[in-house]
Image 1 (spheres, one colour):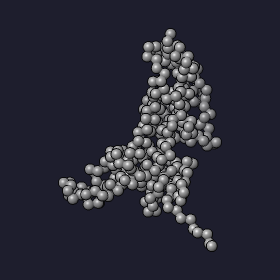
Image 2 (cartoon, one colour):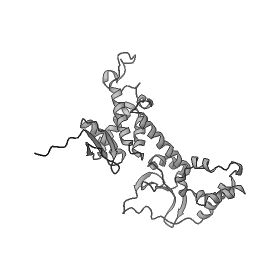
Image 3 (cartoon, one colour):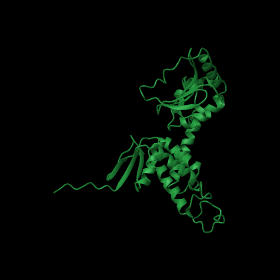
Image 4 (cartoon, rainbow, N blue to C red):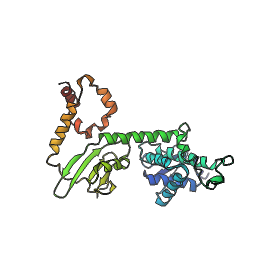
Length: 301
C-alpha cells in the first residue's frame, strides 16, 4: 500500500524572537488565511502531535504594516503591550500577543455605527476606518480570554523594568581613550531596550553601557544617542572595557558603608528583603558583594 500523506490538524508559527519577527508572524497569519495554534520564538518550540511547523522569516515592511495598523485601530498602548510581550521570557508570550491582535482587530470590524451620534462626521463610520471611541477598549477588557494573558505578561515585564531601575549599579571605568559608566544586569525578560530612556535622561551627556548577561544584549549611550549591541557575536569587542577609575574602589566602599549605616537593627528582616530585592539580582549589586550574614552582623552593631 502506498504511504499515506501526513495530515496536520494544527499549524504553529516559529519566528526569530524579535519584535519584528513576531509582527511578521502576525502578518503571515492574515496573509495565509491561517489561525496558528502557537506563535513561538525559535529555540523553545516543542511541537505537539499533528502540528505542523512553519518558519516565518522576518520582514520589516510587513512588521511595520502590522504596527501601524494596530496603532491606528487600537492605540499605541495596545502596541506597547505587544512590544512588551516580544521582550518577555515567557514561552507563550508570542501566542498571547497574536490572540490579542486577532481579538482587537475583530472587535473593530464588528462595531455598530447605527446608533452613534457622531457617525455623520466620523471618518471611521460604516467600516471606513477605525472607530475612535473603541480605540484602546480592547486592552482594557482584562477579563476576556484573549486579553488577560497579554495583560498579565505586560504587567510582569513592567515589574522587571522597575527592578532594573532600582537595582542597576554602575561602575566608573576610565582609560586614556574612554571614560564610561558600566553596569551588568541579569533580568528575566529582555528589558534593556525599555529602560535605556530612563537612564539616558539621568546621565544627560555622560556615556554609559548597560550589559544584559542573560540575553547577551548591551544598551550603549555615547553621550548623544543610544543603540543596542548583540554581544553573543564573536566579532563584538564591547566587553573589552577599560579598568576602574582611580576613585571607584573608594566609592564602592563608601556605598557599602552607607548601606550598613542606614540599616535599622530592630527592623532587620531578611525574608522581606528577599521579597523586595530578589536574590537573583544580588550578584550585580555593589552592597551585596559582601556576605549577607556579615551585613546582618554589621547592621546589629
